[in-house]
Amino acid sequence: MPQPAYAAPASGVDPAAADAPSTTAAIDALFELQRAHQWVVRRRSAAERVATLTRLKRAIVANRERILDAMHADFRKNRSEAELSEMQLVLNELNEAIASTPSWMAPVAVPTPLHLLGTRSRIEPQPRGVVLIVAAWNYPFALLFAPLVAAVAAGNCAILRPSEKVPHTSAIAERIVSEVFPPEEVALVRGDTSMAEYLLTLPFDHVFFTGSTPVGRKVMAAAAGRLTSLTLELGGKSPVVVDQTADVAHAARCIMWGKFVNAGQTCVAPDFALVHASRVSEFCEAARGVLEHFYGASEAQRRASGDYCRMIDDTSCARLATLLDDAVRGGAKVEAGGIVDVAERYVAPTILSGVARDAAIMQDEIFGPVLPVLAYDSEDDLLEYLQGRPTPLALYLFSESERNVREYLARTNAGGTVVNNCLIHLTNPHLPFGGVGESGFGRYHGRFGFETFSHARAVLMQRRPRLSHFVYPPYARLKEGWLGRALAFARRMRD
Image 1 (tube, rainbow, N blue to C red):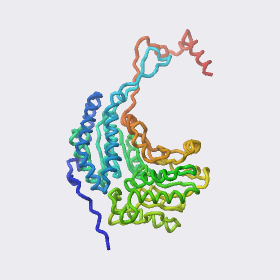
Image 2 (image 1 turned 30 degrees about the horizontal axis):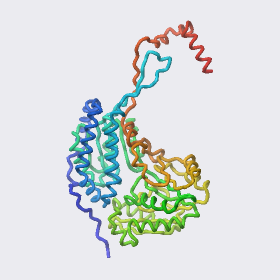
Image 3 (image 1 turned 120 degrees about the vertical axis):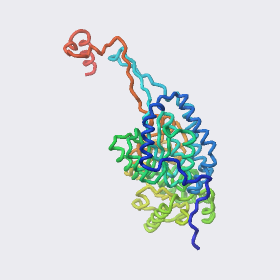
Image 4 (image 1 turned 90 degrees about the vertical axis):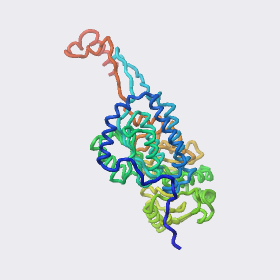
């Protein structure tokens, strides 16, 4: 019988209620308000910035249940999964910023070369000014607030733009922002894609965008006209390698979790697996066992599992159904799953083997719970294939050979790499997170986020004696006396 249309459960917040600006004129007024107020915000001391971050932390903790309810309402995201992957990530960023902002803000003295004797130099981190943070829908809380933590620590004003696809999460985010910040410092703007496009026409001092590579190109084009600096956190097809020395049972557990958390809607999810030909059957068997343990042995149990979330919209489901059909027609074997129910926004956790390297599913980021498994025969075959693909946001390596790991790292490129696990590099605030090439550019988390939202201002202070006067015209003096001899000696040493 036909399935009922997907209906989101209640979240306790009204996704339609919005105090944020809803017209271009209101956005213009908000932007000008922040531009004028930035000179107040940028002068705040470390203690004042820490106090603001502490208020933000308290507001998030106080609204914890509403935040978790909202994400479950938007796409049935499991509360424990949301707690681990979103709440804790933001709280970790807050704790790090609260503890470290004073040291991050401190000027850094740099050495004085001999020819600048009589001066002293330092680097002062300064706020960029008014920044725009555009968040994706797949981790709607973390991708909005983690960059905000860095922007506030660095002393910026900010306008936030959440995705229109997650109205419940956007509503509770708006509530938190309005509780903690006056609009002249931080404000949240909701609306459809036209609102996001309009925001990109404004002369922000920095734009931080998280989303797909195609949209990232549009953001970059919009910023180019104003020479606005950018951070682009994009995605791509992040590979996972299981070599012939790998612990396959361990690899299967990690990969099944990394792939199917958030129903595969994760920018750093393993997009496809490259498994040594001698281990493919073993890997697929182990993966099926892990899926049964995670989500249930039968299709009915997996569909009913409260630990498995839904796709964000009907379009995403239909796209995956098309890719699956094409792969199977091309000779791929469904090892597990393969079920798509658009009405329920449900795509079963799916494993495909025997996928052709030129199949449609291997061209663009899957961004859903389908894992193609491709066999490779030799290390050269593996590395040649990886080197021929666009640079991914993440690369995962499963190997018990230190020599192999060194070789893979030396002969590949990626935004980040994890050896013998998946995703967990995101949770270390001392590691930079960001892409390279088509997976984006720029970095954040911890101090790296503070630096992203700061300008490293060079400051040189002159004090007597003023040796620089000796290089002023008339230049004939440079050939005479002790300075001329010193320059001649320096040339001889250099040559």
